[in-house]
Amino acid sequence: MLRYLWPAPWSLFGLALGAAMLAAGGRVRRVQGALEFSGGALARLPGATTAITFGHVILGRSAAGLDALRAHEQVHVRQYERWGPFFVPAYLAEGAWQWLHGRQAYRDNRFEVEARQEPKANPIQLPATEPAPPGRRRTAPLGGSER
Image (cartoon, rainbow, N blue to C red; front, top):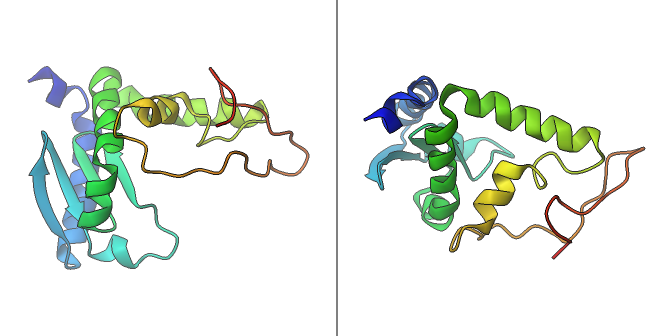
């Protein structure tokens, strides 16, 4: 029960976004203890992410995209269970820390690194290196070298 209560503020935020997706023609299903919303408005947004997690709610552009990213997004669900309402601030702070040190805010974020290391959770194909922002140097991610 606590694992659902601790991240509840972010789950409620995700439910509000999911309700908007449903109102715009999306669908919802319960998988592995999380509600997965797909389609609707998110599917039509240009440049929108394939999936994003808020507590026990996963929002995706399509059901197929959610199927492909389920293991990765479930790692984020477990991270919300550990960090509760502090997960989003910690995630953003970690991304800022990486960026300020010349690394990629998303790719090198320790929460994303953990999600990519989960077996079956790495369908996301990132290039070995990405251009660093102007005036910044590209370095290897924490805990390892470029793949």
